[in-house]
Length: 247
Image (tube, rainbow, N blue to C red; front, side):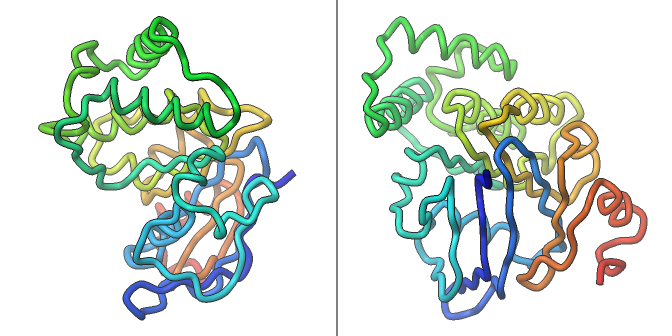
C-alpha cells in the first residue's frame, strides 16, 4: 500500500508557480529522500503537504493512506498521522514543552476515538522520549524553542516526532547545521520509527545524514519537478558531481 501518492502537483506562492507537476510516491514502511538545489521547491512541497497557509494548489492530487489529503485542514492532517519537522522551528513564548506535547497528544488521541493519556502515562512517555533524544529533563519546563540554540531546536523537533509517533514524517533539512552527535540523534529518530506501517520523507542536501538513514529511494527535485529517482547512487552522484549532473 502507498502511504503517500502525489500526482501532477502544481502549487504557487503569491502568484508564482513553484511546483510544476510533482509526481512522487512513498509506499508504507519506506523511508525516501528528497534532494535538490536551493529554490527547487523542496520546502514548498512540505508546506503544501501540511496545509500551510499562503500556498495555493492549482492542479494535481495528493492521497495520504488513500484519503484526499488536500481536502483536510492542517490540524486534521496532523490527527491523521502526518508530521513535519521544520527547517526553521518557530518559538512559542508562554507555552512549556510539556504542555505543548500534552495538548498535541490528547488532540490526536481524541480524533482517533481514544481517551487522553493520564498524567502518569504522559510523564512516563515524556521522560522516555526525552532520554531517547538526550534532552535534559528541565527542557520539559522551557517555553517551546524560546532561547534554544539551532541544534537544540532541531533536537526538539525529533523529540516531538518521537512523542507523536506519526505514520508519515517529513523532515525538512533537520540536519542543517548539526554536529555529528546531534546528526546521529536525528538519524536514530528516523530509524526508530521504521516499521511496516510508517514512512518518512527526508529532505536534505547532505550525504552524511542519508548514510545513517539509508533511504529506500531517492528523489531529485529541480525547478519544481522530480527529474530523477533511484537508489543511493544518486546521492553519491550529487555529492561528487553536483546537481548539474542530474538531467
